[in-house]
Structure formats: C-alpha cells, structure tokens
Image 1 (cartoon, rainbow, N blue to C red):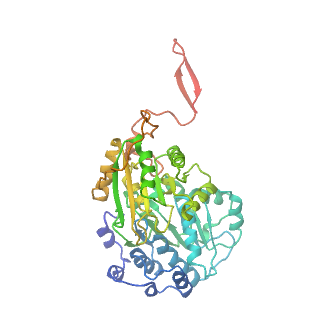
Image 2: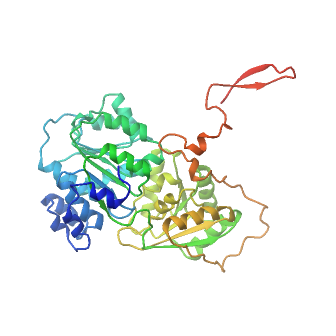
Image 3: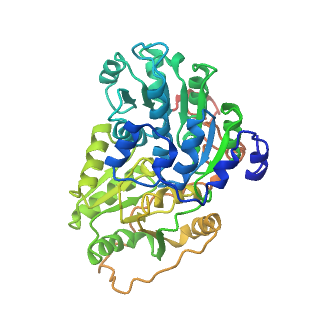
Amino acid sequence: MFKNKKNYAAESPKLSDNVNKEINKEIGFKDLKLSKPVMQAIADAGYENPTPVQAKAIPAVLSGSDLLAGAQTGTGKTAAFTLPILHLLAEKPAAVSRSGRPRCLVLAPTRELAAQVEESVKTYGKYLPLKSTAVFGGMSIVPQIKALRRNVDILVATPGRLLDHVGQKTVDLSGVEIFVLDEADRMLDMGFIVDIKKIIALLPKQRQNLLFSATFSEKIKTLSASVLHNPVFVEGAKRNAASELVDQSVHLVSQRLKSHLLSHLIKHHKWKQVLIFTRTKNGANRLADKLAADGISASAIHGNKSQPARIKALAQFKDGSVTALVATDVASRGIDIDRLPHVVNFELPNAAEDYVHRIGRTGRAGSSGKAISLVDKEELRYLKEIERFIKREIPKVLFDSFVPPANMPAAEPRNPLPQRQGSRKIYGERTSAAAGSRNYPPRHGYAKKQNNSKGNIAKSKVR
C-alpha cells in the first residue's frame, strides 16, 4: 500500500520513465502503436490526439502491466482502457473459445456507466471480429442469458447482476485475461466491496488488472494493493479537482424559492439542455413535475425508475426533446453527453467528491460548461467543505432579474439534510460514527415494547 504518489512511484519498478517524460509532449494516436482497425475507428470518431490520461495509460496497458489510473470524470478515461484492450485481444486469439466465457471483464458501478462503456467498445471495435455485451439490473435477465450463450470477448457488468449470472451458471469467469475496475471509488461508496471480492475470487490468478478511480481514499489504496501487482501509476489530471473548463457559481437562495428560481434561470437564459441534481428520488420527481408545470419539458432519472424508463429519459435528453433531466447521484458518473452546457446542483451533496463528479458531466473533452449551485443557508456547511476540497472559493452570484411569486405558502416540502460524511455507508459497513450510535430500530425481526401499565412485554413485528 502507498501513502502518497511519490512513495508509490518509488515502490513501483514498472513505472516507466518514458511515461513521465511524455506527460508534456504533444503526441497523436498514431504514436501509440495501436492496430490499424482500431486507428480507423478512432479516425471515424473524429479524434486525432489522445487526452493526457489516454497518452499515459494506453502504452502501459499495451505493455501488459497492471495499471492504477487517476482521472477525473470527462478526461477520456473509458477510451484509455477500451482502445488498448481491443488491440490486445485482437492481436492474440483466445486459447479456449466457449460461450459465456469472456476474455475481458469490465466492472462498472451503475447501469448507465455499464451501457456507456459497452457502447464505446462497439464504437472503437467496429472493424474487429470481437464481440461484447453488457449485463446489468433493471432489465430482464432472459435476453442477457441469450447473449451470453454466444461467444463474448468483452463483458461489461454491474456487480450484482454479474453475480446473478454466476449463480445461474450462465457466465464463466475462468477465462478472463484482463480485468477492469472502472470508477472504483464509486463502487466502494455504493457498498459493492463484498460483491467485488466474490467476483475477484472467481477470476484466474494470472491476469492483467486495470483500476480507474477519480479519487483516492485510503480504502481505494487498500483495494488497489489487494488487486494490482506491481502496477504502473498514471494520473490524467490533479486528483479530487474540478475541471478548469467548468465555470462554477453559487446562488444563495432559500429552499422554498429554489424551484421558482430554477424555472426562471432556464427561461431567462433560454437553456436548451440542463442536468439537475437532487438529493432524493422523491425530490427529483417533485422537481420534474414542477418544471413541467412551468412549461419546461423535464424528466426524472433515479434508482426507482425502471431501466427502460431511464434509457428513454436519457435518450430524450440527449436528442433535445427534453430540456431538463432531473437526477439523483445514480447519474453523476453514468451520463456521457458531448458538450452538455449546464449542470445545476438543486441541492448540494453531503460529500464533496460527489460535487466534483456531478459538475464533471459538463466541461468534458475540451468543451466548456457551467455548473450552478442553489444553496440554502442550511447547506452552507456543505459549500465550505466543497470549497476546501477543490481548494477554491466558488463565486456567489446575485440574480436581480428574479422576482419571487406572490402569495407563496409559508414553506415547501423539503428533503432532510443527511448526516455528515463521517456516517456515510462506505465499504458496505457503517463507519465508526454511525456504529457508535444505538438509537436506531432493528432492520428486521422483532422489537420489544411496553404495552400496558403492568409492564408486560409484547412482541411486535418491525416492518
């Protein structure tokens, strides 16, 4: 395990000096020695020069080394591993070809991200005979089983659905040559560590491992130490930092005025596409309904929506038929939209790194974007934590053109502020702050209560 970047590099003999020398050198994809079919697909996509993380990661993956890559969202991370993987698999035929036995496994934390990665695999691998498929929850498992009955070279999956297939014996992981953990920090935040360990136990010991993470907590360092062997470390941009291409601002506004101000901003500035983040699923639904009532086409996307509904909402948002997409953090890393102009934090997240992931949906691949946060006085402590995290003060902007509606009710329903970050559920367990409290009901089973003046104890089912 490493304590910092400098020490970790010193402990990694395979950390190539050439990688460091190339950091500031302008290179093109033609310099990366990718195969002609892959280069043709890159040219079709209109790309000439790799992003910094691609320029550093691709040679490392092609060399066969394990890789630990730090890259903030929107820096071309997906292509940084899909391009060299396609090259490697095409150059070396499979030793054993059998249905449901992938040669490469990519684990992603969300359905949207899994679908996005598999779409990139198809885009860059269209001139290769390699086959790919994605499996994730929220959809019928039957079509996925049919897809796995055919030969699959690259499998992209979310952990839970992959284990469902393992249980039904529709997938065989014994032939995995390359294993990718994408958005590893998000995986741990969502409590997938137990599933990840189960999946790793099913993989062959001899394999190439690639781990990508936007942030590096101590738990990420521990996970990387257990998965990676003598890895190359590359970093595409400063860790835990928001993109310099994102123009960030804050509007200080009371909670009950937020939805009215948001409608005003969309109409006044004639926004055509805006991604809005709320803290809860119910809050997302309410806000989407409010925007629709104000004449703004809007849809909500969150974990309670069926996968077909989420796919439809995202497709309508991408093609411009829906102006506002209201999302919970389930979408903060699974939405990849070229030149998305606006992101709004309707409510601030209680974890500063989630703010970085949210606003990272704009300002991607060299395009500029704007991130606006609507901040109530009770959220000021979260704003200060975010500013400390990104090491900058976010400008506070006045909105002189906004006039609150007359005869407003005293207050609107509001989402309760969550506990501070110290009590978040990380790694699938309560943190020490939460574990120290015993003032919560049991999750299942029976609870005892006093039910009469004589102090007799009765059992009641806790629901």
